[in-house]
Length: 132
Image (cartoon, rainbow, N blue to C red):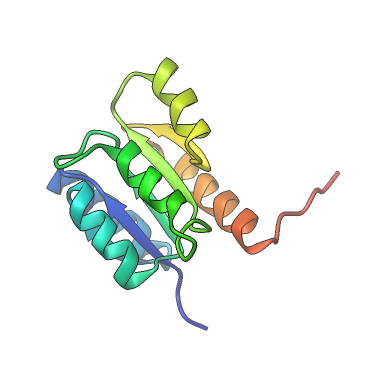
């Protein structure tokens, strides 16, 4: 079985490196983009299983990337986890309304990040279980 591929979209190389180490340590294949244009191109070319997306990006913010994703029949199913340093209140609501599976703030703990990834992938694959 192929490993799960995650596209990390963040303009900060330190954040990309840190997420790469954390994700690879948990068995994920990691792809990168550093702005809205390269994010869109990578999405089209690579069709990752999940996207971790910063909102503050050059060449269009994360909301632009989510909008492009939702407008594409071949990409709209890819779950997006927003991971940002932007303020919580209005950005969280806007991101979730734009289709984000989760909204996390930087810095994020490994447990919270991995839980969001597992949850988003389970929903997108139809594996969500309700255990009581």
